[in-house]
Length: 303
Image 1 (tube, rainbow, N blue to C red):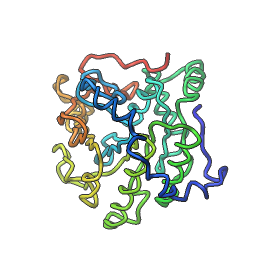
Image 2: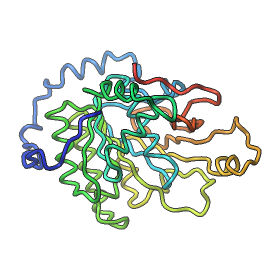
Image 3: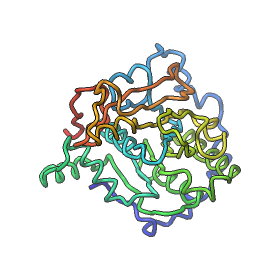
């Protein structure tokens, strides 16, 4: 189910090296085809889609960009990015998940449940899901703190050997020494944005929000932990927020407004797009999917 990349199974030395500077210096005519496409563009959206139809005309995950997915601990940012990866796989995008906080089997359990549209996938569905992930999903198996040089090597390997299109790095704080290591954070963002730009991969970086006494307030990009350069350097910034009051009221048997969203994704920045705003979502507990409207059915990703 998915292809697991073991850290000890590959000679990483060649991928730890920066590419030769001379390979980056080319004649202007080398960009002729890209220039022609850009000049003849009708202004249509370019890039992969998010899972929710109401975002398709305003948001895209473009090649060569870096997106930050930030949220408070326990607000579901990793769960939501897992659903985003499922949607990308359904679009025949090749995806690598490098989670340094969760073992691959746990990541796959959650994604399989989301893909099954229910709480208890059958053995047959697990088999179907495993086959469906072939040539769509890879996982890097290492947990704990990882050097940014190693992360960069994994990304270069994914590009050169696997023709990867999307890479999820979960999370930034596993790649730097601490929350107050602002230079380390800036250097990490510099490196990841350069790799995204040079390879054409879309890099998804999961990050944390500063602790707040008021979880009822939807955070913004200025609430990201660490350096302000994180949001400055990213192409896109998405903030994931869960309506904890509604969740706790429902668990306590109190009346709740079902039309009120269970979660929000705030697009705080979209460098190459015109739209910024909030995406209201409703949580389907059995499948653990985020839905675009109250009463919608979970999406079927495995065909």
